[in-house]
Image 1: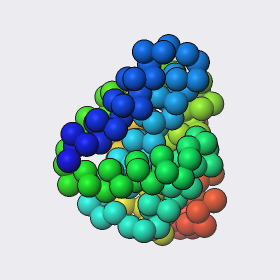
Image 2: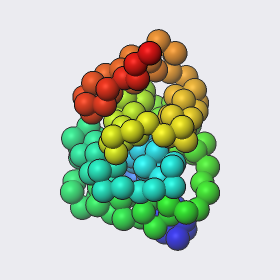
Image 3: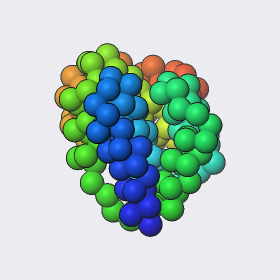
Length: 160
């Protein structure tokens, strides 16, 4: 199953990368960021409808993917929910290709996905922290992204 996700990624990224256009590079970066979103969806071992909806909305709204492309990424990601993957190929592309502000936005989207089911799981938080570190997002930006996502998701901060 991981092979089907990898094949989709390669077909949409590698084939277009050969063209070496700015549009191709942009598309590859969006695909890599989308893959990171799914990693958070599956981080706690439970793929919920709410998380998939937030992921799909983020892919379509933020990255401008078509409904068909976003549906295909979600479908392939669901099939891979139980398999281990490496974040490196995705984080490397995003880290090298996105501006600091774009990377901060990716972290915010990761938090939105993490908060989509109404709670903050330790596994999801750990993964978002790990990805933010691999993207070299400064800690104050990481915290700001978390606060903004929490506010947008309606999840109340812990008291006490």
